[in-house]
Every structure is written in C-alpha cells, then in structure tokens.
Length: 192
Ligand code: SF4
Picture 1: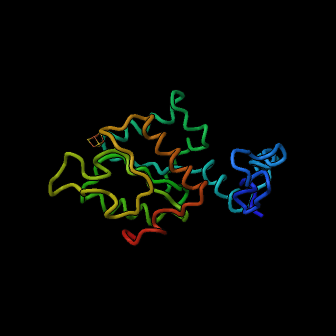
Picture 2: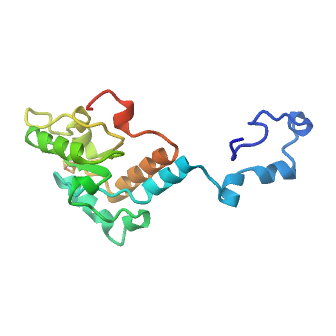
Picture 3: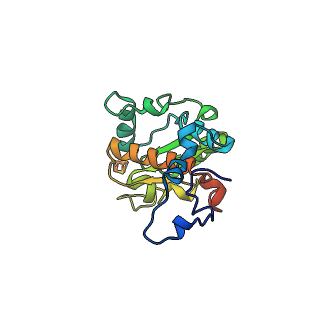
C-alpha cells in the first residue's frame, strides 16, 4: 500500500468515514503522512530528492539577465542552501542550463552544443523575456525563444527577472523533479 494517503483515498470505507460529517478517527489521522513521520520512502523518491540537492548549473551567461543570475550565489540569495552554488565550467559536470539573456543566431549553435554535452538527466531554465520569446528583439539576429533549440523545463518571466524570480523558478523546478515529472526533453518532441 502506498503510504501518505488517507485510508479513504485507499478505498477503505470505514463506518466513520462513510458517516457524513464525521472526520477520520485519531488512529486514521496519525496514519496521515506516515511516510514523512517515520522517514521511509521509495528509491525513486530518494533519487529525485538527491537530484534537487545537487543540481549544478552550467557557467553560461548571455546578456543583462546573466548579471541577475550571478547574484544568486551571493549571501543575500544563498543558492548554496540547495547545494547549487557550484557553477560548473564543464557542461559534462552540469545538470542545469540557465539561459540568461537573448540568444543570437550566432550563439544558438554553441548553446545547443553545450546542451548536448550535458549528461542526462538535465534541465533548462529560460530566464527572462529574451530567452523565453526574444523579448524586445523581434529581429533577424535574435532567436525568438530558446525552446526552438532546447527543451525548456521552466520559464522565468521579467526583463530582467529579479534574483528572487529566478529562485522561484528553481524552486518550481525542484518541485517538478520531486513530484516525478520527467525532464522536458523526455516529454516534448521539440528540440531533441
Ligand atoms: S530580458 Fe531584459 S534584462 Fe534579460 S537579456 Fe533581455 S533585455 Fe536583458
């Protein structure tokens, strides 16, 4: 039986549960979130938890958004609380690509090469309006959204997004990983 659900959710219709207006008994309440209370879990969940505590970003910045991205390692924002302060210079040691800034067509090839060199599982955050959609640069030189060349897991809006917004995007990504949502390249046909 999978733990962490109420008995009623498992289909156990005790007299009390079926009695409209009566909540679960004390025993049933104590079984709620039993998994967290006694610290047991599944291997899959443990791996997902570990992935969110050691998700190393690639050292890659493209434009003004990169300055905001850099500040998340400072003590004010403290990305070290997630074990993520180690920006890796080699894509082979990175799990997360934060596309921070507009992507010119000239940079699209190198960006895709870095993405391809990252080992799986890997995740991508499109940070800011330019990375997500080209932003104000609706012209021949700028890619109109990085999701045309890589599969994006989280888009962070703003021009530039504040570091808090990027932190929010990172937390949302962690929630997706812990909930068992596969990386975007596994669920999207685009940009594989
Ligand atoms: S979204 Fe704004 S701050 Fe970010 S790269 Fe584009 S113009 Fe610069």
